[in-house]
Image (cartoon, rainbow, N blue to C red; front, side):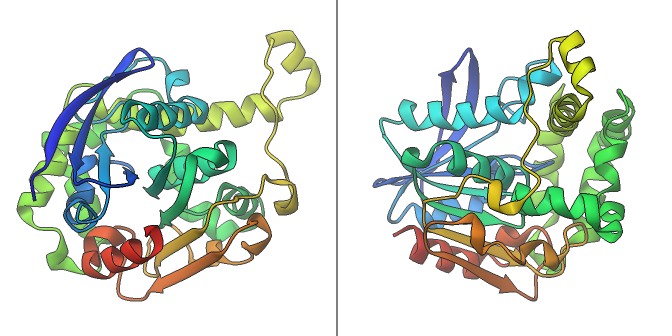
Length: 304
């Protein structure tokens, strides 16, 4: 397989993209604290049938890193994916996302249904289910402690960046279930990406942006009027969320240390298209790396 590395200018920023194969467009969206390299196994497998594009999301690795927290709001991230589809000469794409990339993928499918040919999400709960769990499930709230730690200015990125992002390497090592799936060389590449100037700050700004937006939306009406905030709160009930019209596959490594399996329950009302969940017992959070062959097989069948 030959991977082409391209720099694509969209919406006033430049994104680095790993590109392989020919055929219908598939876009792979990575999570935190990763980069395009997390999809190395899928680039090889999917490129036999598809034109596969794995960008470094804005703020990561070799892509541009805007400083403002608002530059990392979901609306900006969704618009980036939309612009990438156009930049690669397509009108629609198969959208695949893991972790934070999964959050972007869920939102893209809801907001850009005509652009979403098929959807696949890996170890990322639908925002309707996740927001409900954070309100009602103390165990999930405890597992998501890091989201609140990331709201502290400068400290999280400083600690994570020490010793060439050693904490990033430990986070992978401590949470992976299939230990030989991520080698020392893989960790070196991921730590190098996280150590680029501004990368950890930008990645953490994803969490800051979504929490600040939720705060603005949930603030009292008088405060929102005074501050000029126009954010609408997310729907409280699952049935009130926009339904996804693309055929959807959710792949879930069951031994995820941060995201409980219960986050996959009760999702059927969110879809007006075929929806399927495939659980992988022998995998943690990094499922496309821990169980690459099985994930590749599932994605090839679903995206066809």
